[in-house]
Image (cartoon, rainbow, N blue to C red; front, side, top):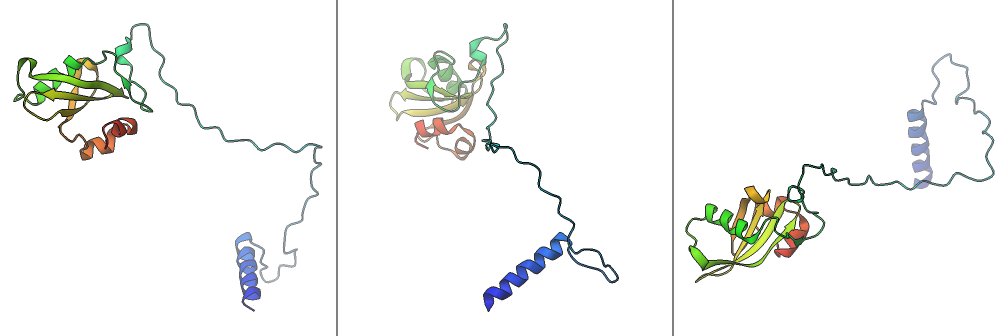
Length: 169
């Protein structure tokens, strides 16, 4: 009994939505006339597979240098001098002037790049290693975080996933 009521309800709603109701004094057909089906071809048209738009990177102009192009965000790679470890140390010294001077700070790992982000581990004399997250062009690095745990809210929310994985965030 419930099945019949459900079918009746579905058909009623379908009729209301499709406009198949009559008004008083309307003697026309309830549904519009059906046109004959078009001739079918011998072979059906194959379904098309949706194609995802290709990610394109801007073409390098003759005046742009390789250091101005960001790295891929899909994976982490050596920065190959873009930036250098010394540039990262200099950026960290600007952000934390209390670091030991001279040879007290050395690069242990990196810098590793993903997108415009860099991850570097520094060895500091008399202290635990510092993990540094920077971003930006090599000549104008911005220190995002520096410390024993680089996984701040800002880093987790905005850094490329491949870099987060490398930093164990």
